[in-house]
Length: 361
Image 1: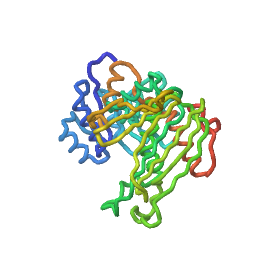
Image 2 (image 1 turned 180 degrees about the vertical axis):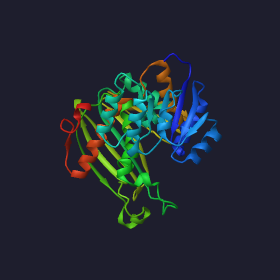
Image 3 (image 1 turned 180 degrees about the horizontal axis):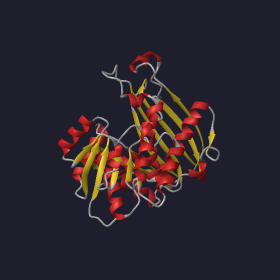
Image 4 (image 1 turned 90 degrees about the vertical axis):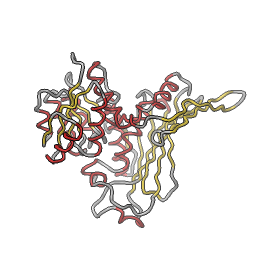
């Protein structure tokens, strides 16, 4: 791309869309060409507040604007892929919010549509732009853990009492979001762990289970809400590597927040999310002294990278003709895991990746 700046249009002016707008304003290699929202009033207000050159009341109007190079789709999952296909057809580089898609078929459609054309990126990479993540990635790439054995994520958030408001509707309906807590956070968790280990994992089979709200608090959500609030999975990968996963909210259990990568010669204990103050610890196996601990990274991170990192990375990839941190090949891996997790959870049986889209894993 023989330009010094990327002219960007952002579709969706809600909370997440505004984060992308703020990131576009901050980046001196990006121009905020336009914003769009289904509500013309919301789009107009966002344009005035953030200085967008113009505003539209539909995504299609942004796709039809010849001055726009790239589009961010900060809209619900169930309509996002359809809009992305239109954006790609219009020749726009396209960045999609998370969850990545409703299913693997949608990612495959994006692969076919973008072949040899515009770049496509995904915001599931958010937490890999934090400073600690790069330090952890280097530690693993240097072989300090030996042969990988286990990747672990266990994050449970306890119920804190009756919420003042129910979560937004898209969080509660599988038909809109593709799932609940596992869809929302699994895209981040799996992207983080697979990304830090160089996208080398090759899942072979999975067994999973999901649950909804406990009966005693079932009225926290309105009638008709069907998304899960707790999920767990065991994923056997090639080369004797295992990934264990657990995510829950509104739990009748203490808070736990653990991400860990264990190898034959040591392990790394991580903290993907907040707070910004972190100490990332490594344990290393020594024949004489046993396990010795060391600090891989310590400090206070700039948490704004969670909101701006994906857009910064994506627009730079356009200017430099490189691949985004999470592009289509990575999205295929992630969505295959997500699809098979839900298939197993709903059937109550193990699922082989060789039979369920495993060609992408």
